[in-house]
Image 1 (tube, rainbow, N blue to C red):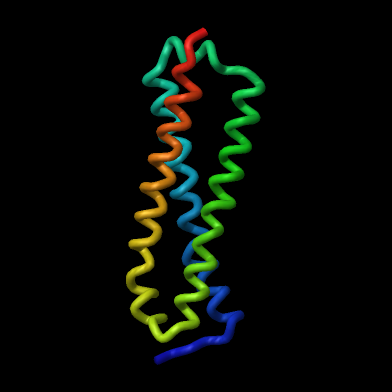
Image 2: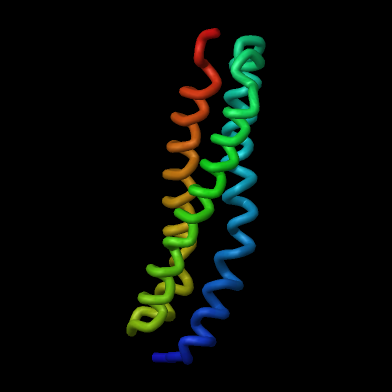
Length: 116
């Protein structure tokens, strides 16, 4: 069993998760854009500064939620399951990505289909 210092484990976690944050944000943005386009022309009527601020707020919340993965990653890497985890943590990424996409879908449908 290979163990590392907290610094080494944290550095590995950051180098694994941060590049995937880009994919996470791209997917969530794509979901919003898809529902905006699907709702045209009605979705144009809900565009305003308040909606833009809400979308920015939700993007920040989504990225704060993404940070929860570090709690799991650091904990498991400090356990005896480190090597197994390093090979299988893509599963957590996939589940989290799907969950976030589903939440984004419901928010997008709600915001972009309001009748005006």
